[in-house]
Image (tube, rainbow, N blue to C red):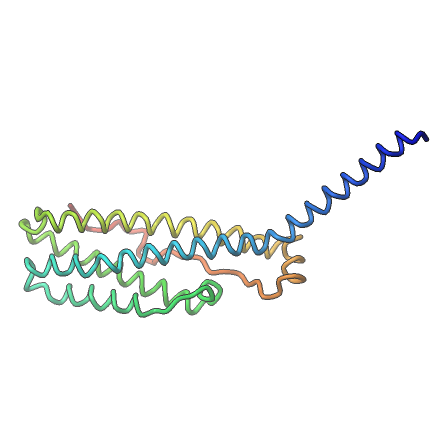
Amino acid sequence: MTASLLGRLRLVVVALALATSLSACDAINRVPTLEEAAKSRWGEVQNQYQRRADLIPNLVETVKGYAQQEKDVLVQVTEARAKASSVKVDAATVSDPQKFREFQDAQNQLSGALGRLLVTVERYPDLKSNANFLALQSQLEGTENRIAVARRDYIQAVQAYNTEIRTVPGRWIASTLYPDAKPMEAFTATPDASRPPNVKF
């Protein structure tokens, strides 16, 4: 074998070894990369729920001026917002089924209370044409859309992460290098989600 052929052969072997080690690093880093992506999406879900919670006091105050006799509905919205805001969540929530369910239930109750409030508004034509109410309604509608998108993105990120830690070779890598890696919870539809809302605008 000539020296140049031997040199080329060494280069090929080194290149293959380097490619294999880089591929192994990618596989090893995939679990924490997917976990961080899912946590980031979870942060966006929380951000959008907080945005909704911040809009609700203004919405309630605007409706109050028109709907004095609808105090029960306004109280329900206010209480549901307080409960949703009081459920403390952090990064550990996504891997704790009970905490995650508490968070989801509180947000679902708030969504239901808001739906009842908007149905109540139908009785007040002047309120429906009020500029402040229309602006708040538009912001709230936009926020609900953002929440839906954030939840969808989070569900997809969790699916990728959970699949990685439950399938080979990710399962082996997770159990060896990341023993704390636990499956994350995803949102589920409420039992009445298949029924269309009765709100008319």
